[in-house]
Image: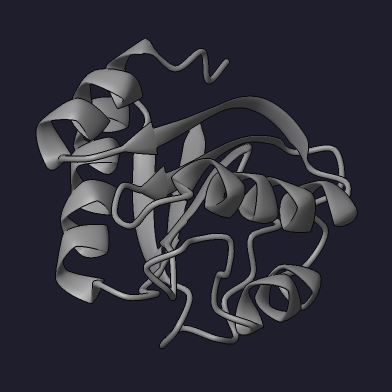
Length: 137
């Protein structure tokens, strides 16, 4: 099964990329093909061909709740993603990280994505463990 891990840098690009790579490794260990997509740089990527999509970002501010403004725009321009099974994640940092995760989930649900699971991730090791436990099929 093909899966995509889409990440948006927010406040800390290096940590967000590290978590996205850990998540991808966990999913790959279950025998799935995974592509990591940088939502900030690969703005014309189409997600139609993927059966499972993970979307994540870190908060823009210390107080949380805000994600990069182009996240909803990226999702709306990424092809047919309505009904796709998905996973939302926020990279831990700042105070109200739950609100940041909620904002990511709202953007995904607005496009009709079917959220199977969501999580606040703090490290690549934790992300890899979550990736191994995701029910992708």
